[in-house]
Image 1 (cartoon, rainbow, N blue to C red):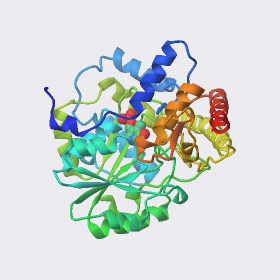
Image 2: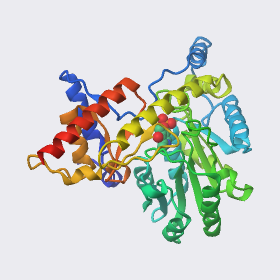
Image 3: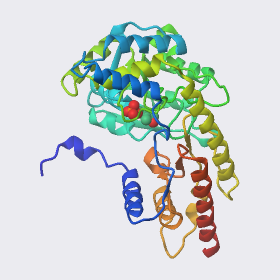
Image 4: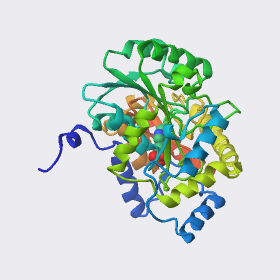
Length: 400
Ligand SMILES: *Cc1c(COP(=O)(O)O)cnc(C)c1O
């Protein structure tokens, strides 16, 4: 068959099976409640949509500079200056077709065969395949729920070898919602500097943080460290713009030049209209972000409260993003009708069939004891979904 070795080396996402089943259940008329979505359930704010309409009407519909138009790069530079107190030149900034595309270009521009990339687990599903598609090897480092799923300096130190090139950090985290503090980043930074590796800091959820906690980028630790960090961000999550496909990176200019070269030979520029919309997002009124955070905050407290009230289930309070990541391993021991209920995949399968609730199994994120809930859905749907889960789990227990 006509198929590259690279394609053989990556597996289809384990979430696909559950999603496909949820879709076919819906098509059959079953009212499935989904906690599976990885995107805000809000509309893109009006002023951003209007900027896109204006771009179309004004004929801003042609190829642009490969790495993004200068006005957008300036808006990104200003964002990083205002929010993170980080300063960059235009040659140190680049725009791609979403944060995921940034990560892909970055891996392609920096990695060689046999290189290693340290990825703390639970991790975002796309990190390992992106590394593998660049010919390098992901090195997965486990973290503990009791340590709020944060990578410790000792665990980092232990995972570093002569082949280590990059460490990928994601704060606030998808799937755990954990947020690193300044002090925790400083301690990791010491190890990073001692071993001369670089850091990919995925900051896509930087504005979605609760309880007035500040967001800190590891690039802020010191000027020396900033030179080793690639700050990755985008408009998808903060401005409910997942379909627009605009992400960006700031970092060392040689690598940015390499990434631009790859982009010039693959996708060319990100969508011209979406670039104009992204300028409006970054420079326009920010009140939509606050409203969204308030809604997520209310849902977060309700959902996590309900989860922790279930027997045997434990869930840390997420500090950011819009996910909760409870430990459901207590339910794995229980079998019903000879069904294999060991692991997050079969539990999620059971809950989809029996409770009509779609969840993402933790195994997709490298943590099989857990299940990911996205609370980017209405409070009413959350209430109904949790009721159903509770009822289905009770049935499991009572029939065992
Ligand atoms: C959603 C997401 C991204 C990127 O999303 P894009 O839509 O490609 O910008 C990157 N990292 C994490 C952890 C995400 O959850």
